[in-house]
Image (tube, rainbow, N blue to C red; front, side, top):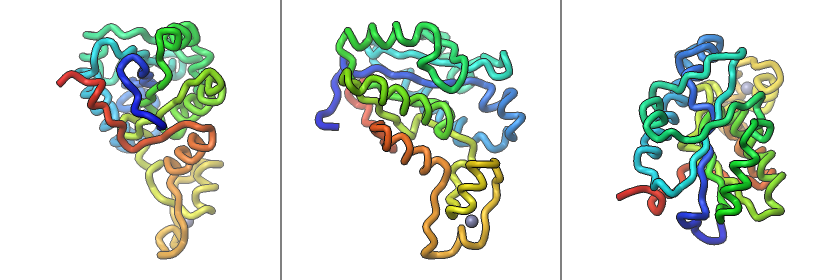
Length: 219
Ligand SMILES: [Zn+2]
């Protein structure tokens, strides 16, 4: 970032902080025990929302997994209900298709927002697809999308470093295995999350391990 964004220039979008990804339908398909990174990121989102200054606009999205399972995750339920943030329902991985999103973004951009902070889940799917798409669509209007990885989660297997062959198998077929080469010193390895970060950066998205929220939270 050329300069540190100020209050008034930053808005926050948190994607799919739903129970579905931690204990619900999606998690039970994928294996609930593999969602520890997602649960931890939801707790960090909740901790941020508790302290976030009230003049920082926040939008939440949800996905109707299999047409339902919309409940907020228990890590965030209390704060989300207390703050009554606006929320949109995504028909698929792309929030640009969600009714009400374009209007919300137009409104915050007219009010001076030029940095859109993104967190939520999953890093390798909705966060990756959406942040890349919106960066490409709105960069000409001066918008910078910033993904804060500390607020993002994906299934735990997405953090496992893999050799290129194992990464390709994982990305193409979801084959969650590693080979001897994956653990051989000198062989370059990439995790699916690393791969998603690379994708987002190629689209112009700024990806940070942990954004400095100090100016945006109450002391
Ligand atoms: Zn391998």
